[in-house]
Length: 115
Image (cartoon, rainbow, N blue to C red; front, side):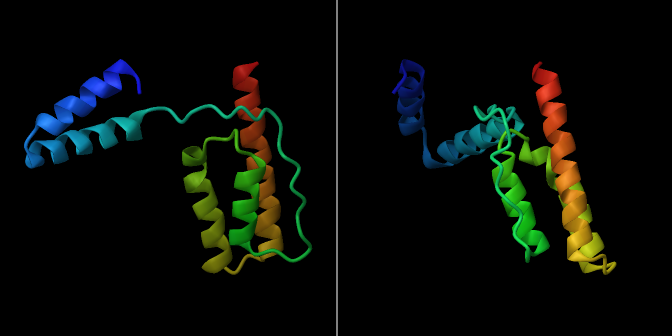
């Protein structure tokens, strides 16, 4: 354990329970604001698309296939595509095609920013 982590653990142990909870909540808040760690994977993993696949399974597959793409940045778009499928009746095949394009574009954006 790093010296700063040991020091923080000591401080935490010395605090009353109410203050421990506050410190923990503050640490969680700071963590939520921190940038996501960069993935060491540089290229998509090449996970093939199955012939039969649900939209949810496709999103999971694409997240695994593109680990370098920050997932927080994808939440709104993937939710929108899911809504198009569930509420508007857009076919799973078409939604998955759109999701694959979205993930590929985000990947190119991430790679372009690091070049």
